[in-house]
Image (cartoon, rainbow over all chains, first blue to last red):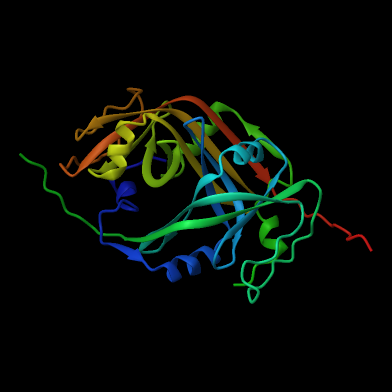
Length: 151
Length: 151
């Protein structure tokens, strides 16, 4: 695959950027289930892709017992990012907050009226909840730009 | 959208996980052009989605002059993650290294025989190169699991 400037035009913030409401962000978070967990471990950044669910006030993911969890336990300040490409742009939601390891039991939803996911608990997984203190969403629109090089 | 355990099965590392060769990782990096840049800023994690190109030995992205760049300049140790869902699984490539702000000029490719992207330089963008010291790729396969709850 040969990349050209067109590839960059596909999702650079070159067009209008719209800040999204908190409610809009949660609706987007609910609409997909793969995100990226960002940690700072001894001031070194780490990113892990995770499956998650969002219940409208927190994000829950599960993790096999392993390295990722061990690092989380000593680095509870996390960032969580979800994005999606659309036909005419893209959106990205970033959530900053604290991570709490809940253990192997399926957690209750933060809101009682949300649908509880039908997870089957197994000993190999631990559930982790991210409670956000900050949530930010942006929508990027594509924009065709004609740039005349200087002669 | 109601999420069920099926959502989680779609991309949890429950099936076989295959470690990918470095060459395979670069081929995957070349095949897409949206990744997530992870930074540690004052020991707080940050994630930014970016457009990038990979030339086989480094990753180059461009950024508008702004916050992201300012943080990069004081945090040259970065992580960069790209993933993609496949019909029967997913892959994720994570690259750790240093970021170097190149300036507003279109950078030369690290390898002369790679195709140079046809970017048009503009004053509003700065180019940043990530030179990896470590690259890791994994492929996750879906696996249907039948779990009988204890009665």
